[in-house]
Image (tube, rainbow, N blue to C red; front, side, top):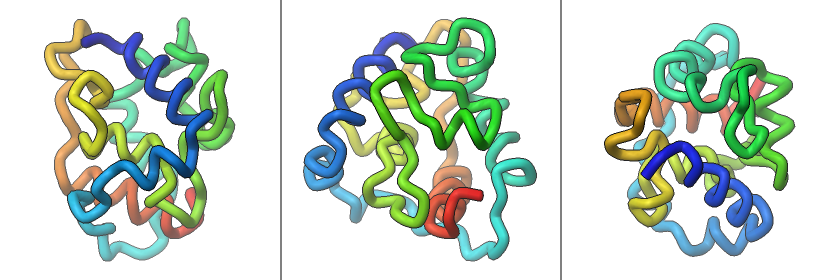
Length: 136
């Protein structure tokens, strides 16, 4: 699996939206971090820089999804939003990084060409808290 699969995932998932959210087992999500005031610049961008930017940065972003700025992340992919501020349960990006989707839709994908490591439960919890706090 490579970063191209995110294009498929985000394309299909963004169009499916709520239907996909109902299909994932949200009980498997790590809990949201207890930290208050989570922001993109301070907390989330470093996670994305480590694990996502090589495929979703300014140079040839897969599915036209850029994760290098708050504005770009909230804009989503060529097929729609991937983050629903205030609602992590409907945020496709969170489903992908938490591996709630089929294995070929995990992000970063296993054995990816840029050697990006999976996010830790703590990182996923921080992303979840950021989304729940309004994705600012």
